[in-house]
Image 1 (spheres, rainbow, N blue to C red):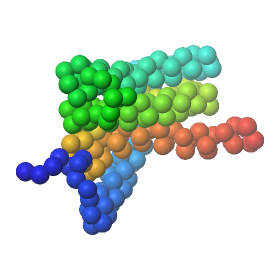
Image 2 (image 1 turned 90 degrees about the vertical axis):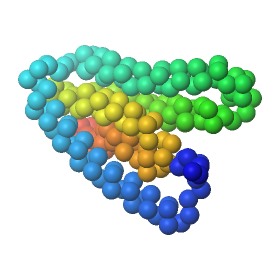
Image 3 (image 1 turned 45 degrees about the horizontal axis):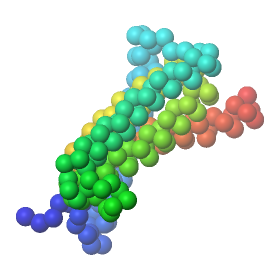
Image 4 (image 1 turned 180 degrees about the vertical axis):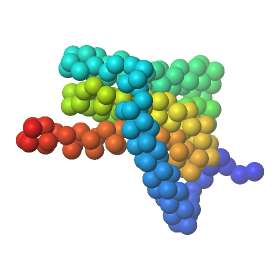
Length: 192
């Protein structure tokens, strides 16, 4: 049957195919995220009043970030539970690299930690720079992050193409958020 996709060493053609797949998926996810964010801007204020005062905006972003860090907690739980039941892994990360039993949960945890840190900072930055209905991007980002984490984990064993959708869903809110921040900072501090 062969090795799982994440263990296969790709040749140049496979690398090129994977790169094209990642770019295609990333482009689609980018536009879907923009559509969801714009839809949230127009739809969510009908259900929810977004904060306008700075302290409330920061609090809103901080609470939203908790939902990102819950995924880190899930990853920690998966790795620690896997270690408890694996003689190869019970010694912890200082005893050696993870066995195949916890390799995917460990990779999921590491990646989730990185992505949660990036998106949390972006949400806090946006909450300083925008207010009101523009904050609808925050719940959209949290939903994308959560769906992305599930699909990343489920697709990991199939290799780079298997985790591409989940990875793009996870990181697209941070990419869009940082681009928005980098556009707003000069505008707010130098123009307006």
